[in-house]
Length: 234
Image (cartoon, rainbow, N blue to C red):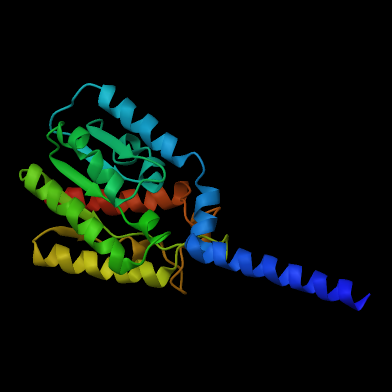
């Protein structure tokens, strides 16, 4: 009887050890969570990218460039401007946006509102995310120097409403780098983190159902910030 107990214990320990090893090999629990919750995202990326490439060019537009958080906004209505293209794709990250940048820039946009980085932070640190973000921005500036580029902060998440693979500490580190870069390069930095956070620095629970994506009230607050910025400039 004791022998069977010892064998069972050894088998369970080996199983647990194998599971821990596998989790470590594939990036830990955060990475595993992200992979499970992002099944099909890669196909969505290529489907949306292909559709955008098939649409006719529209010179002088305002482009909203980002991931699912940008994709979820009805920007023509929110900003009261028919000359807006929504180029947000769910699950997109800095490298993905850079790889589809030629489609965005063929419209010769007058303005680009960029929000990027939160999906990178689901897998890698702010320090590893930053070079990818910086490369994306430099490519926009180099390839389309006449476009006015607005760098929007990454938004907070709320892991109390629902667990996400992103920590707000990492978001704040990346946002500090984005703000510093904007100031050093005479670009407009738009701080939306502070607009949508609660008293504890999380995404306000009134603005989300899943801890990361936004509801209508949040998009209205976001749009109000952008409308004010555009009104001042005009």
